[in-house]
Image 1 (cartoon, rainbow over the protein chains, first blue to last red):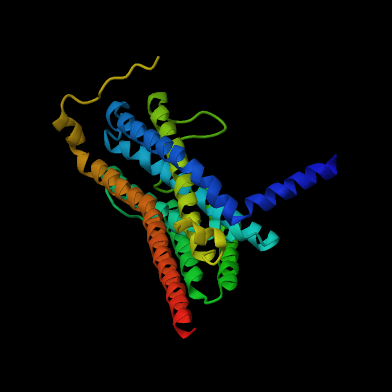
Image 2 (image 1 turned 45 degrees about the vertical axis):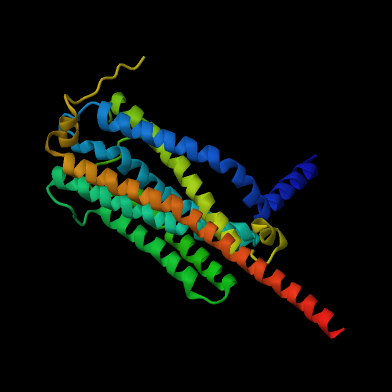
Length: 251
Length: 75
């Protein structure tokens, strides 16, 4: 019995590791994922901007939370996605894992940039300044540079294998930064407020504000998955152009 | 059921956001812009790749055809 389970896992791994299978399967998912993510993001934005109650202390500027929090969460989770893909690629030498890893880098960099930017814009009316060298903000800036590092390393080598390996190692080393970002608001109690939503214990946000926030978080998760798949598909085309199935695509 | 009402008296009020409109709308505007770029960049890349490939296929086929004609001429 165990052997058949192992065999099943192996077969699944092998199939999922095949760029062709990935390209064809995700091709079927993309339209649904696109509709779901756009729907959730539009719904959540209208809800958050127009219908969620005003914040007692921050007034309307707090409405930036509905984009700032989901984007920041995904900027961090996206780093784990990139590092996990890098680890899988290093250990099991699975081609598609390398492609997912380098596809996660520009996406993560863009989200980290947006997290810093929306936070900075929110900071002006709330803290009175666009930028402070607060622990949370500084560690997010380091996250941005780590993503940029992976993007640069990926383009720095003529050998594909070397580039992938270097990216995987930098991704893995950089994971040390993620728990620092996460705990920074508790370790160094400076300007940035602590987490609004907690998995354990009560959240410090009004339910009428929490609902649209959850819609936005789900929407951004779907959007992340969508763009990661799109990026991976172009990476597959760029690397597998010699194979007959890719050549057959344009015919 | 969730009871919900529009929090603003008018459209102008909604845009102004009691003085915070500039911050809120700038943040949302730039976010939408970046998300659109993120989603369409791979689609454009893919389209470019396929059109280049189509051209190469055509060029190859033409080569093969002209070779065939040459072969015919030498025989």
